[in-house]
Image (cartoon, rainbow, N blue to C red; front, side, top):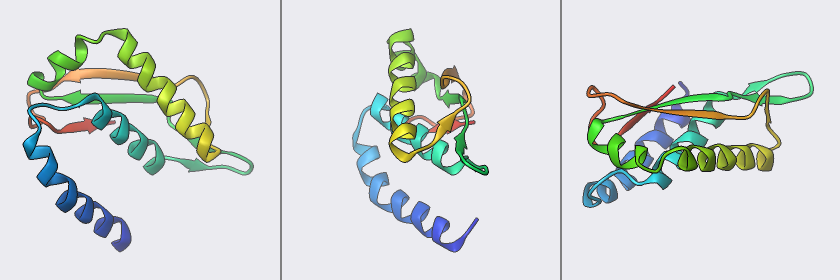
Length: 116
């Protein structure tokens, strides 16, 4: 990990950490933003294209997963469309339509997420 990347992550933690503590629970927009960051971090540069992953697994604490999962497939479709639009805006290519999976995981801290 480069020094600049570590600096950016630390600055983001310092500036957004204070705001996260005030919110009662994880918001859908936070998941969307983290998905875009994950997409950008995992891009692969080819000869004529820049490819991004098409499968994203989001692990949330069960207290956050329940309210988010209640949105059903509509939320997952919205996330997929959002990722596709962001990739297109940056000139990136998906091999297939992006797919997002939500999973509950008690090892993830409340109001945090792990994306693979």
